[in-house]
Amino acid sequence: MRSIRDSHKQVTHDEAMEILGQAEYGVLSTIDKDGYPYGLPLHYIVLDEAVYLHSALEGHIMDNISHNNSVCFTVVGYSELLPSSFTANYESVIVFGKANLVEESEKVDMLKALVRKYSPEHYDKSLKVIDSFKDKCSVIRIDVEHITGKKKR
Image 1: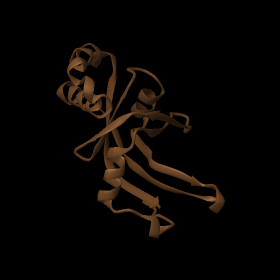
Image 2: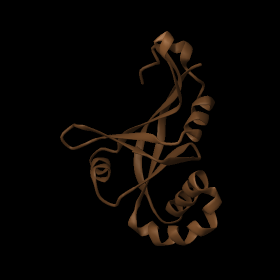
Image 3: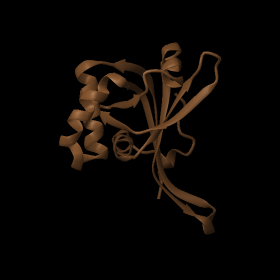
Image 4: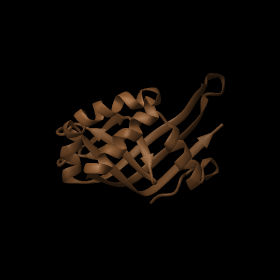
């Protein structure tokens, strides 16, 4: 993997994982069978240093992953424009890895964790929704092969 050009902005692995775990959404980038990139913003969670996302059963993402499961996932954890300085403060993380579909208990565990992250006050109510939804969605696990992060504050 290529190293970060502005190495003084590079964060440690642990800092990158913290930014990744706290950001609200990220962009999953895949490549289609004709070589075109496709990026889709998605909500996600991090469990055991893997990134989990949910998706439809069919569509661009599923087609692309079945063709080539190498993916990139990018998050911006913080951003503040500094107009008078013509710059910005920010923190961001890029994950490179392999995307694979998960099933059964791993799928349900991810959906429960997704609710805990985004709707914790409705967790009990979500269990019925998850039970009815789990067969109508795909859950993708990105096994992280390389992670890099930067911040400027």
